[in-house]
Image (cartoon, rainbow, N blue to C red):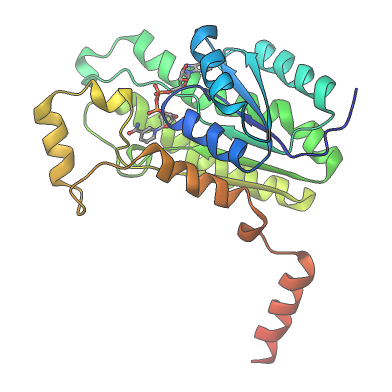
Length: 249
Ligand SMILES: NC(=O)c1ccc[n+]([C@@H]2O[C@H](COP(=O)([O-])OP(=O)(O)OC[C@H]3O[C@@H](n4cnc5c(N)ncnc54)[C@H](O)[C@@H]3O)[C@@H](O)[C@H]2O)c1
C-alpha cells in the first residue's frame, strides 16, 4: 500500500450529469479522483479518458451504493491503492416519480435504497479510516425536493429530506474528529433527468425560478469544490480566537 501525496476524492455516480462535473472539478484541482459507477463501464471509462490529460490521476470503481458489501469492498480497494480517502461526495441518485396512489413499493424502496441508504453506506464505510486520520470531508448531494417536498416525488423528497437530517446528525458526530460533513441541495439542474421531463413540467419549474433558467452541473460542482477546500474551513486556533474576541465584546 502506498500513501498518495495528493488528496484522494471519491465521487459516487461520478461519470454522468452533476457527478461528472464534480469529478472534472476535482481533477482540474490536481486531486486524485476515483469515479464510482454502477452499470456502464464504457461511460465511466470515457469520462476517465477525458479527465486524464490533466495533471491528475483518475481511476474507476464499480459498486452499487445501495449494497453495503459492495461499498465496503470499494472503500477497501481504494485504501489499499492510495492509503487514504480525503473527500467523499455522495452524489449517486435516481428518481422514480409518481403520485403516491400510483407509486409502487419498488419505486419507493429503490429511491430510498440508492438516495438515502447509499449515503449511509458510503459514509459508514469511509468513516473508520477518516476517524483514524483525524481528517476528512463528506459532502452529500441532497435536493430542494428534500426541503420543500414536491408533489409526485414523495419517495425522492423523503430520501433527500433524510439525507439532510443525516448530514446534520453526522456533522455533529464527526466534528470532534476533524471531519466536516455538509449537504448541497440543488434546485433543477440541466442533466438527463431534466431532459426527460415534458415541456409543461419544465415550464412550471422555470416559472418558479426567479432567474428563469435551470442550474448547470458546473455550478453545483463549484459549490462542492468550495466545501471541500480549506476556504470552507476554519482552524481550531482561529475559531478559539474568534470566540475570545466575541466574549471581549
Ligand atoms: N438534476 C437535478 O435537477 C438535480 C437536482 C437536485 C439534486 N440532484 C441530485 O444530484 C445527484 C446527481 O443527479 P444527476 O441529475 O446528475 O443525475 P444523473 O442520472 O445524470 O446521474 C446520477 C448518477 O448516479 C449513478 N447511480 C445511480 N444509481 C446508482 C447506484 N445504485 N450505485 C452507484 N451509482 C448509481 C448513475 O449511474 C449516474 O452516474 C443525484 O443525487 C440527484 O438526486 C439532481
